[in-house]
Image (cartoon, rainbow, N blue to C red):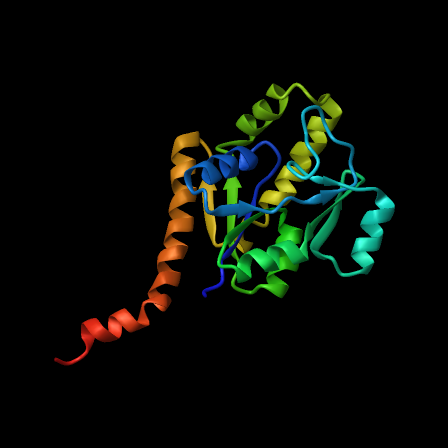
Length: 204
C-alpha cells in the first residue's frame, strides 16, 4: 500500500487558511486534517478533539519530553503542537493529511518528512488582511497591530513553500488548493501504475 502525502497549509492570521481547509475537506472527503494540541483555553463553540486537543501546560511539557510532537511552538504565550503518532498512522494507511501550522513548524516537520508539500495562503493586500482581522470583532487595536506585525514576519517566509495561493476570491482560492492536492496525487499515481505501464508499453 502506498503512503499518503503530508501537506502543510500555512498563512498569516486572517488570510482564510482555516476556511479554505474546511472547504477542501468537504470536497475531498478522503483528506484528513490533523487536530493540534494546545494549552490555550477553548473559545466559545470550540470542541475538544475537534478544533483542538486542549491540554494543560504540564501535560504539554510532558508530551514534548516524550517526543510526542512532530513540531511544536509557542504563540502569544500559548503552546501548540502536532501529534506524531496519529499523523504517521494516517500516512502509513495511505491517507493524505493536512497540517495547519506556521513556517517554523513547517521546518520542523520537513526535517522528519522531506517529501512534505507546502502551501502558503496569502491575502490580496495588507489593507484587506487588516479589514478581515477587524471584521472578526474579537481583538482590540493593540492585538490587531501585533497580528499585522506577525503577519508580515510570517509572509516573509513564503519562499519556503512549494505553492502560493492568493485568497482574493474564496472560490478561486479553493479551486487552486484542490488542484494542488489533485496534482500531487497524480504524481504519486504515476509511480503506482508501473505494472500497467509495463503492459501498455511492452512488446506484443
